[in-house]
Each structure stands twice: as C-alpha cells, then as structure tokens.
Amino acid sequence: MSIDAHRWLMTAPATPMVRDSFRAKPQAGEVVVEIAGCGVCHTDLGYFYDGVRTNQPLPLALGHEISGRVVEAGEGAQAWLGKSVIVPAVLPCGECDLCKRGLSTICRAQKMPGNDIQGGFATHVVVPARGLCEVDLARLARAGLTLADVSIVADAVTTPYQAVHRAGVRQGSLVVVVGAGGVGGYCVQIAHAVGGRVVAIDVDDAKLDMIGRHGGELTLNAKKLDGKALKAAIGDFARRTGLPATEWFIFECSGTAAGQATAFGLLVHGATLSVVGFTMDKVEVRLSNLMAFDARALGNWGCPPEHYPAALDLVLSGKVAVKPFVEERRLDDINDVFHAVHHREIRKRAVLVPG
Ligand SMILES: [Zn+2]
Ligand SMILES: [Zn+2]
Image 1 (cartoon, rainbow, N blue to C red):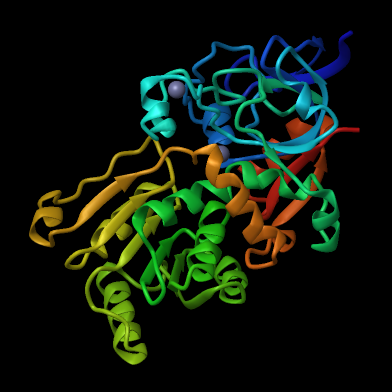
Image 2 (spheres, rainbow, N blue to C red; image 1 turned 60 degrees about the vertical axis):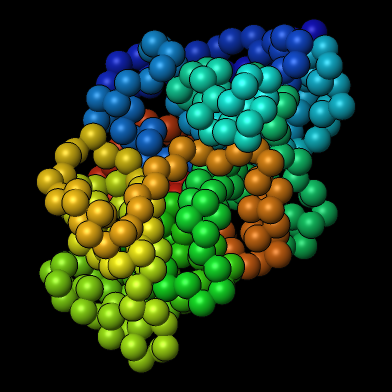
C-alpha cells in the first residue's frame, strides 16, 4: 500500500515552488508521517533566497520543522504506526562510531529533511523512524496546543535547548541572547526555565516587548545602544542584581553579521559564546580576545534526538510558551508565505498546515 501525497518543490533559488504529486512509500526502518504542520525557518529562507546550497540537489521540498502522525511504517518500524510525533530536524544514523560515542550531531550519515532528504512542506514525508519524538496528545490538549503548534519543537525549540544545555547554563547564570525572535526567543525562555537570568538584545522593540514578558529580565535595543553601551548596561544589570561580572553565557541567535559582532563584543572573562544563528556573511573580530578573556566559543548543529522529550516537556508544562509565537498558514499558500516572511510581513513563526 502507498499513499497519495503532494509536496512543494524548490526548483531554483527565488523561483516559485511547484506542487508535485508523489507516492509516499517507506523502506525498512522508515515511516510515512502525515504532516500536521511544518515551521518555516530562517534556514529555509537561506536556501530559497540567499544561495545556501542544500545537500540533496534540487528539486527538493524544503522544511525541517515537522510534526504529524505516522500513517505507514516499513519493516522494523511498525511500533510507530498511529503515533503522533515530532521529527527531529537532524536525524543521526545511530550506528556509526560518532553516534556510538554520543556525538550524533556530527554523524556523517545524518539526515535533515528539506536538506538531505525531501522535507516537510508537503502533506506527507518519508523519514527514518529512529529518533522520532512521540507526542502525548492528551497532554498536548491540556496545554492548549495543537500538533501543528509543536512542529517548531523540531528545530526552533530544540536547537537552543541543545545550545543552553551544552554551554552549561545553570541557576543564577547571567545569560545574554542576541536576536530575540524565533530561535532566540526560545533561547531566552529555555535559559530562563533552567534558572538563568536573561538579557535579551534585538533591533526590534516589538520583539523585545514580547520576550520581556517571557523570561527576558532586561531587554536592550542594539539600534539605540552601541557595543560599549550594551556591555555597560549588562554590567550594570549584573551589579544591581548580584550576578557575576565574569562567565557570561552569550548566545548569538540573530544569524546576522551585526549580531555576531555584537555578541563577540560582549565577551568577559570566562565567557561562553554560543553561535546558534547562521549567516553567509563574514565578520571581522579580534579572535585573540578569546585567549585574553580565557573564554570559549561553541558551535551548535541541531540537537540529539534523545534530548527531544525533555525539550518537549518544557513546552507541555508551560515553562516555554509556543502559542504566542506561531501563526498557522495554509501549505498551498507557501509561495505567498515565503514572500511575506522574507519581507517581515509575518512576524511570528509561520507554520504551514496541509489541507
Ligand atoms: Zn531551522
Ligand atoms: Zn551516525
């Protein structure tokens, strides 16, 4: 048996995506997920507008923030049939030496929907079953959320979850998040949920207002303050609140050169700089500041599937709010939605919903 499905294929950069009918058929170890929602990520815009190459050549359906229900399962994956799931944005193979050593985020056989394999801007997607995160529908309903709402856990929540976890944020840590929309907004909420005291920096007052109500204790607009003034304001906040003047945790989530320069400029002794956002642009920095401050810089790629249940739990328990930050749109309006997100006419995270 196979299922009639359609997806929207990117055929060339900045060229309207085209509707493509296909037959979804799982191989051994794979499942077909009937998609409830798929979030539109900054990374998708990077592929579509900025010339970032996908690993699988075009035509390709983009989309890596997928939730849905397993409607068909290949050999060895039948246990997933009928379950509601979040598909991790990066699916490691689970078998290689790197995976076995707990380094699954750098697994060379990993599969990312909408990059390595067909993605979630579709009615259905075929993905490996290994690593799927089951969603408890009763708990979801109690939290006032839909399965489409939590699609964004696949990346926008779990990527900063992994970054916060890896950096070692703990109770009483001073955390600075540069770029407070999308991924950065969840970074603020997650750092706050684990006990961090969070300063949010953005260039958009509306975003700062919003995140000021969701875990951002101090909000600063980088359009109004230069690097020096930002650092002074955070130092002041630290003194007022009894937080340390050293060992700040800085998360660059804007994915812009200006944000990266700002984040690097906030280094203090023993600081941890986590690069979470992506841009093709370059910045000029004095890298030796890492040496002089005895600081460290960390990259972050995805999140191991084993952390998904804990990240989802933050959402289902209400410690991380999702609803105010997502906006559902029809999948078949994808070209209009991309245009609107690109031109900042949709300010929340757009989630494309089939049907
Ligand atoms: Zn993404
Ligand atoms: Zn692997």
